[in-house]
Amino acid sequence: MLKAKTLQKTRLITALLVAIICIGGLLGLFYPIKIFNLNITPLIQSTITNFTLSIGILVILLFTVTMIFGRIYCSTICPLGLLQELYIFIFHRKKLPSQKNSAFKYFIAALTFGSLIGGTAYIIRLIDPYTVFGAGISGSTYGLIIIAILALLTWSKGRYFCTNICPVGAILGIIARHSLYKITINKDSCVACGLCAQKCPSGCIDFKNKNVDNETCIKCFRCLSLCHNNGISYEKKSTPKTNPPINTGRRRFLIGTGALAVLALAYKGGIELGKKVVEKLKTTLLPPGAGDTKTFANKCLNCNICVANCPMKIIQKADDEFPVVHLKYQKSFCDYNCHKCSEVCPSGAIKKLTLKEKQHTQIGIASINIDSCIQCGLCVMECPRSAITKAQGDFPQIDTDKCIGCGACQAVCPVSAIKVRANEFQKTLKQ
Image (cartoon, rainbow, N blue to C red; front, side):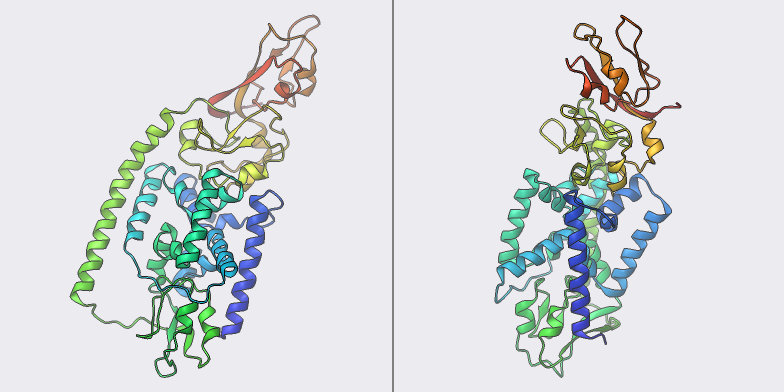
């Protein structure tokens, strides 16, 4: 049996470090450890769009950790889970409500992940904990609204979002139900005082029947230190092999069948929705590595970590015209010697490129309006790839086989005679 104080201290220290890294990364302050690469949804997205051996190992690792220790992901790694921890600390309610394990979350998970597998991240952006947290921290209107609603929900029902709404929590809960280590109540030591249940943020303790729902338990370990009689423990415990009542077994079968049906419909719907999303889009400049408008619009999770970490501040948040992040060169340009967005994107929406690869990725092509051009030659001097040449007394000429659409020429032009037009499909130049 593991000691309560050691578990709680380890969990709190880990959560604090993760919170610092998350906030630092999402605000663009620093990003020493790519903690977002350990978030479930970006990992699943990467598995679908850009699978590598390292991604597969991380997915297996997280699910294995959950199978052994339960839902510690929710209390130590998930950024939105950590925000709810902060809410609970601030509100400091004397008694948190108990919660029933609702089957509704399985259908939410089937809908969101089904559509994601089908090819669009449009639906999961609305509810995924990682995405919502990123959108909120970065000041996105939708993210701020959801975080405010979450504050009210946490005040009234504790971590109800984690236990009965979150699609990631639903998946981890199914695994955690059969985890090796579980929170258990010693029926001989427990005096049924109810203190553990009153302080449980996920409302998963039934102190009257001396039972803990390890599917919804987020392993905060608060209950361990609250019990004065050492009646609660976190230890290796096998699930007793008993035949469930007929009604329970039938209920699980119906829920499972229903969730699978929703998953199949969501998969098909995701394919169709993905097509409709891009119908409204115009050809827009995208970060190097985004590929093309159609696929990027259905890959990007709108977490805005690339927005915060772009040193040139040219990556913009989603708006009414474009549902995902995009580039705008009005005030600056894409630095030729930077590929930060490619480095920080955890979902694979922006493909990871080396600096050399990025420097050869054509995201657009510059064009010159000769009616406005004053032949100053500043664009020639500013182009990092020598793609612009100018003969004496002539207008500048752009070599489309060299231009990558970085916008440096557009930014330096004093009369706004240069405009970069996006490629529908980004391509790699040979030179």
